Length: 181
Image (tube, rainbow, N blue to C red; front, top):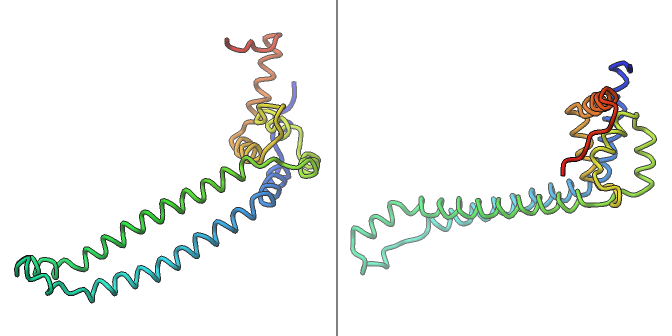
């Protein structure tokens, strides 16, 4: 029976996957960061302008509504403008989150080049390769960045050990498991 240490990925596996993923996703991360920072700065500038404009609004021209209504509008005027700012902030945040998610989805679907895979596989230990094989569920399709990210997560969560235990169970039972119908 094999020793426990042969089923464990090495630090080099984690490092190789992290470095490869960084190279493959760096452009996306930089673009998303720049877009979020620029939008936040522009929105902060506009926010100040909107609030400043709100302080200059005078409702005295609406005498038709009556004195109590004008007094109400003047008293709660800052809250109306801050509510508008809060609503616009939520809308902007929603669009930024969707922008980042769409970009991440696009990057995850990106196919890893053969040269990158050769370089990565040369650095991985056998348990890490087993996890990559386990994650790569359809060998008719090339490996994607998302597959490498899932491999990294699974390695951190002990998938290599689980695969080794599963193999030992298959040996004990004497036959491979039957796929459910």
